[in-house]
Amino acid sequence: MVKIAPSLLAADLLFLKDSLDAVKEADMLHIDIMDGHFVPNLSMGPGFVKACKRGTELPLEVHLMVYKPEKFLSNFIEAGSDILTVHVESTPHLNRVIDEIKGAGIKAGLALNPGTPLVLAEPVLDQIDFLLLMTVNPGFGGQEFIVGMLEKIRQAKELLQRQKKDIMLAVDGGVHLGNAHEIVEAGADMLIAGSAIYAGNGARGVTDFKDALAKKREK
Image (cartoon, rainbow, N blue to C red; front, side, top):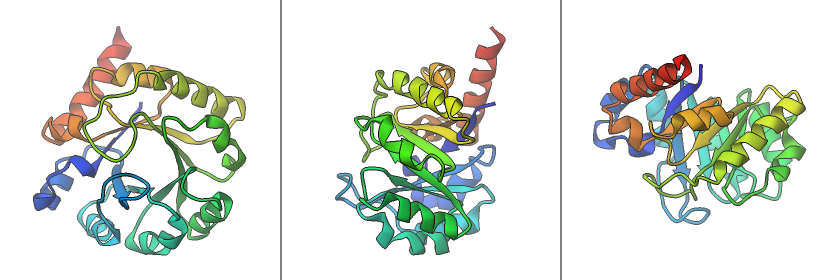
């Protein structure tokens, strides 16, 4: 069964604990960290991750959309990240960054922007646990899924299977009930969704995703 990870970028942060409690049925939580340089927006920091760690038992996948993530790794490791995801485009020292994450005893993720070719991920496939394909240009929630990314998801799945890599393939950006099934059919192991889940009132949104995907399989 595909895993569901609500993106807290779409949550009501005024009522953070309620937002966390509303998605207890999810498999993981996704937290976007933005620096205003790598992407044209600013968002949470390590203090927010620490607060989420206190407020939920779900694993936290922390997505660093920042330039030079090596400057921030220790902060987010100490804050309680379970998976720390960095962008292939964000640092010239990708192997060193991933080694530091793994050396801290947590899982390492690698993210690719829509225009970034999969070949750039291949040199570090032996080091990572989590491959995140962006299906919108990152920086803002509520964007439309780039339909051409379905082929990239298929190619990524084929690459992982061909190389026999035990790596979770996640898709982030514009995911909703209308396209979730074809994204899963293309090969996604995890769906990351913000607006589509929280607009569905949290737990109801998570359940709707799981129910809809199960019904599609029965047909």
